[in-house]
Image (cartoon, rainbow, N blue to C red; front, top):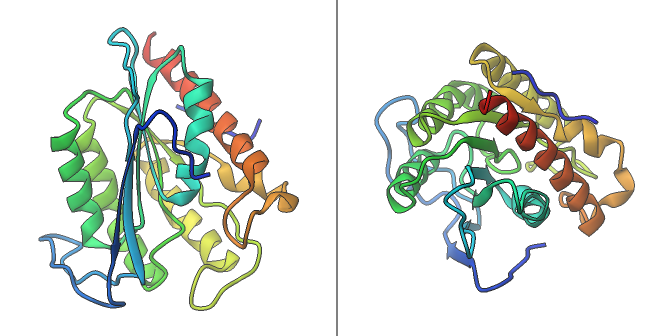
Length: 240
């Protein structure tokens, strides 16, 4: 198993709430105070995608998956794997580390979904290529702080960003993904955050791409099964 623990889009039962916004490339959307006090470097299409369980069991812990379309695609498998273990929520967004909108979205989500999360599994690394690795490094601590604010009692676990099939300039390249994984690893290690090595898992399955970035159903299910194993182990630790 690749998940390291220290310590397709799927619409079912009418429980998906999706918002898609078309933006002009480079249109600023305001700024936040602090390290991310800058204009957003937006993509041609910007979106958020929220899923809440259609039925929650108050006796079960709540889990949040925070990510992008990669996470969105493996979320259904996580939900299936943890059906009797946790209430699993999804917040997926195209806003990236370095984009001030991401922190605002997390703050808005905390207001809209005022529940206690026991585990937050996070990564939204397949966006934000207009930001340099230096900007990614400078902004990553703000993401961790925002997650602690959103879920102060939760165990955090970071998922490594997966490889791409073909490098794309100025989009994602495997060299930049490796660099960002290394940057993120330094911060999550220092903060005592666990790691789900999704990059290592999918590097072993180059035959499972759906396109240059996303994985087919089999690949997404593999990702979801590993994420679910990681989360289940963390939940067991939290009960001790």
